Length: 137
Image 1 (tube, rainbow, N blue to C red):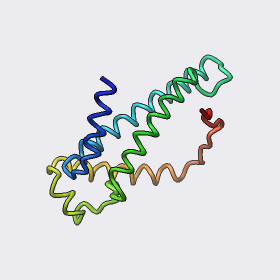
Image 2: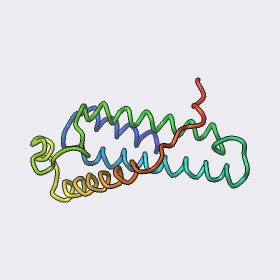
Image 3: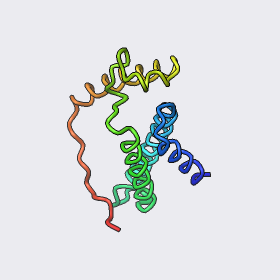
Image 4: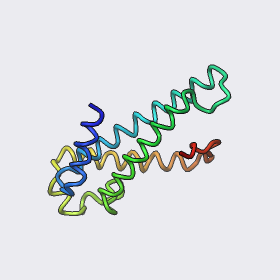
């Protein structure tokens, strides 16, 4: 199932069709969100159980993180400079806007607002630094 899902996602990205942007955006967003939740739980579990490692199951953590980086790299390749979260959707890129349904466009506009507000809130917090580099293979 995992392989099939990733293959289908890659086919949509490789097609370069603007009609797939919303589906690809949602799939990538959901995958990265789940990755974040998994990694946060591995961190929590390590702290609760007094592990010296930053994350429990460090090999699993690194595999999940590597997969997330690969998906994110494909997303950046697919969008080729198009920034959905920074686009003025009232003007927007006509080729992309024309392919989106009204609800899809409204969802992206809402997400843009959310991330803009969240970014302002996060900029007031101290920066987080990583304490451990991923193992080199």
